[in-house]
Length: 147
Ligand SMILES: O=C(CO)COP(=O)(O)O
Image (cartoon, rainbow, N blue to C red):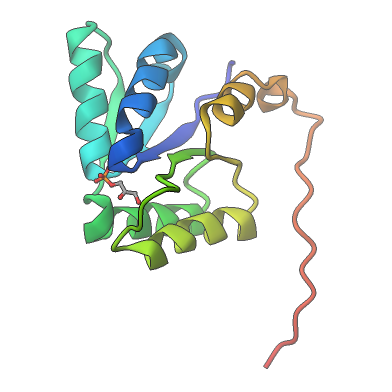
């Protein structure tokens, strides 16, 4: 991929091992991009990258329950995120469910690709569309009533 992307990486506690493993597996590619993570996810990815001698540009926001998802959602709204990988723990409740839904919703509203499993993440980071200047993503066509 020739473009430099800003990629959000977020995982719930029970999915962090999975995301760290995925990030290390794809470190060569990820190290060419800017990574924005929620606090704990980012510190674990940094640690794993350090252990493997991988240099990467990683920005850590607040921890998810303390507003990290909300900060990344705000970046999505401002079109500062090109791609998000969000491994959600679908089997346990989270105290900040509202923020999680907000991040997912803002990615849908602003047409930001978001992978919620590793298979989707693999497909998204290997897509040739990133470098295809003729490809223009179709925006969602919402019909809504203005109040
Ligand atoms: O809770 C999260 C996402 O909803 C992740 O936050 P942390 O990476 O800080 O654990």
